[in-house]
Length: 468
Image 1: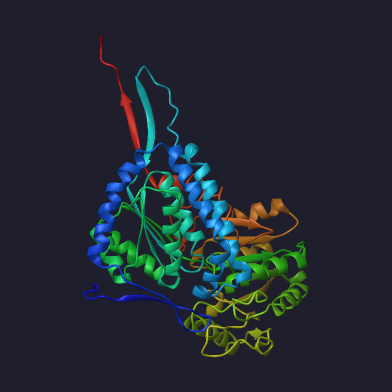
Image 2: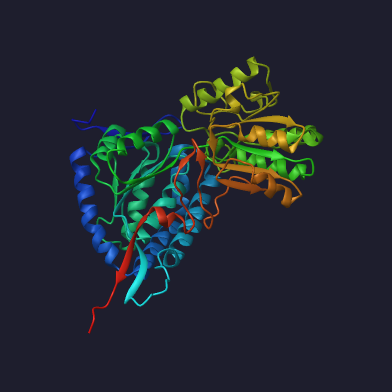
């Protein structure tokens, strides 16, 4: 149902349940006006030389860097990430955005073809038009950056619809592009309700959509967009596995995988959610994991000594608690005593990290995306068994192999159903590599030069001189 009366959008802070930010929702009429003005602005923006567009975008990145500490505090209140870690998101934004800006000339370069006697024979890329970016709350700057900066560099206008949980982050993008001097309306923010956003998509005001979020919402948006001929990129989550081989450095693997599983309270699409360990190193690996997890400090994310904040909302914490309780009832063993984390209080978003063993793929915690601070660990007897279990998932975003044998890691990766294969690292996006996935993780691509293929259209030039 469309909003037919004024309504507000609220960010409820997981820190204390208070209303951190509240804004008036953008009406359907006003949103249609935004898209119309974006379409007009796009033509002027695209006519600017590429070098000039890139220079302005670098200035926007400069602005983000200048307010890094303020943003860290805002993130703590909006979605619970500790202030000790919040500034890292802007460092990541800088790395990704500058890379995508710098490769734009190469990515947008025309094809070099034999002229075959023609005056001009080539293929060029041009902007698709208006790109609608629908961004999530869990990494509110990084996920949006993946689409916004290359879309603008390519000459598109961008309309951003950010999550209500992190609506202040959307305003920070507007602030940065205004400070950089982008032409009016080339980048715009809308605060529409979810229903009105779907209506706008059905009406076809956009030329391309980039969405990051859940599988269910992704399917509904794809259906809404089916009446149009626009493109749509969907990153819909993961249940990312890791495999620790018998020759792995156990201490290194355990410490790295704990960070990959519990950073951001486990609320990462590419976070590690299940681990398979060769039986030869299973016991020492599990012992190290428990040691590292017990060292976390759960609490108020505005406290600089805290390194594990609440999950985004109480319902999310209850969902993970439900997965854990079901697994334990079915025979799993929980190795972390929640009593060691006194901030873990039922009915709140504060949730102690948990490590489960004796788990199976009959348990939801090993097959259903958790998006919280829990990890399940299974012992395996061979590489083949590990591969079979790693592929036993509806998702396919990343995999991670821990081994001294890089050739073996490469050979195993070729058998894995995934978008990115890691060896001896996890939970990191290299902006020079394509970020993509398979199965219910979605479709499309962000980052790398390949992202520009989704944000541009091809135009062929076949120009022949007329006879004298």
